[in-house]
Image 1 (spheres, helix red, strand yellow):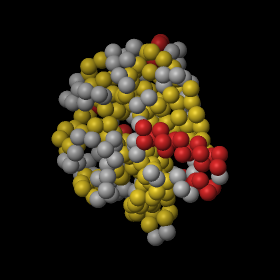
Image 2 (cartoon, one colour):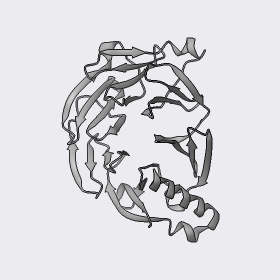
Image 3 (tube, one colour):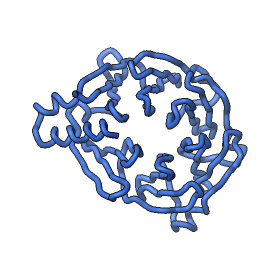
Image 4 (cartoon, helix red, strand yellow):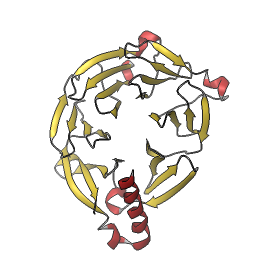
Length: 277
């Protein structure tokens, strides 16, 4: 987080000092060009890309391709890649309510069919700290935890009774001994590991949301936001010019990642930036 804090600090300097400072804030390490429709990064700076044919490819921190998952015909389109644990990758196929677990080489090790637990509609899932699965059952309006075999371990009460409303979560994150459930309309609901509601953080309409350590990051239009969980304070900065046109971005402790579409002769390009020391 120290390096990430330095990145944020330079973003603040960029906002105050103009384009000249923006040009020296980041050093372009590499650009991966090709058929990339989505991507994510883990805490070791490995990159995982998804292409239009549903192929998943893994690149190491140096940008070298190290693994490919090509079993693309069984479950339709992958809607989510969870790399919270770099040793265990989760692919979620929403149309089939199926989670495929891969090892670090992207070899399949297990498959969980959520429909066997009568979960037929779930927009998002996440890996728990103990390598189980969090899933929000939209039909029952409950947050549920399941093991690797698909067995139900716990569930919250019906949110319509708990909150007097149903939710439409777009992201689940397990961080800091809490589970964060993000609904862009109603904010972030924070639960403990027993499924008890602890807080509702009024963060709304953010994109690229990521919970990382002490902070929650997100974006909206050309602005980057950072919310400090313990102090309830947040900061905002205008993004540098090279990031403002990105279709999506992500970041780790030392790097920024920006996905651009229509890159000349290639459908997309993923640029990786390091902080200038």
